[in-house]
Image (cartoon, rainbow, N blue to C red):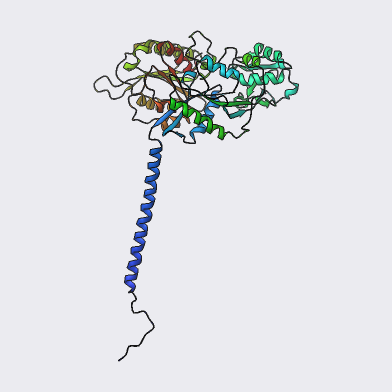
Length: 474
């Protein structure tokens, strides 16, 4: 008997088998998708690790205006810079000798400062990286065209650029500008008195609290990033990173990339810098004028954290003198001072490498007496001490009462402990870390990067003054 076609496929799969195949297909797709995502994460992580295979590289930067310097450092850090397989960590330093970049107006005065410090610019055409309006500040806004030059004070100690530009714009002649800068100068904006009779020249970003600011037309302070050549303290990698810093911050600059400083006579610039340079150089003696170095830090409650390891032996006396003098100066000005020391545990049963000798007190003499009692031995467990000091400082600081930690260190023996995030978080609680690196041993780059300011004292003769500068003790 013949077969008749039913019109249906005789090779249909059962419903159960179809469902099983669908499930298998979904499982395979799920595994493939997750493996791809995992591979992407692994590859991304591998690329990030490979891009910084050379590790971190501290990029030391100094500036004629610390505020502008730190502003640019923050902006550059946000780009996560990588140069020649190094993750670049920019850090602010006080001395030309330590710097790979100088941020300043591109004037003959700036280049004279570099020359006096034995440093040289790596380019004749540094890029513009910032522009800050300069003008007049007082009890009310004013009309610059009607201001009597004799009523203006010029804070050349911390506002030399603004002082020079404003004087040049207001004065009828070069000689009048020089005379005003010479006869009407004050050390800093902190000395300015808020009253209806006097005005001060200042940059817009440095106007004292309570003052009203009026810009002076054509008196913008134009800053350039000046990469420096290599030196005893600046490596070739750091010099390259300095050029990259200049290139990147120049591109980030939102103003006119061709902005130039107003044409001002060199005699006017020189009159705004009567000490012939504000960034201290190693060539200067301890008796030389030291305006900028001291102004780099404002006096406040200060905790001194002193390395008493073997590496500090030849610098111990100078460190004692620096801490003693700074503590007594700060206490006399009404600030609290404290003292910790650290090395590695030297006694049986002791597990901590730091000692909290004197809490923050209003007694500089107590600090001066205590600092002479230390012996030098062991290795510097610096990061452990910094973490503990930061924790303590946060219990003492408040919104209107900052606490500065002045770390005097020869290096780090416990580099496996990370501190960067802790120090950064503490800054939000009004706690700041300032570092004085003593001697020629390798600097801890993470500590330097985390610090608000870092300076170097290469020999014992520089230690005392470096500590006092870091503490803001004038």
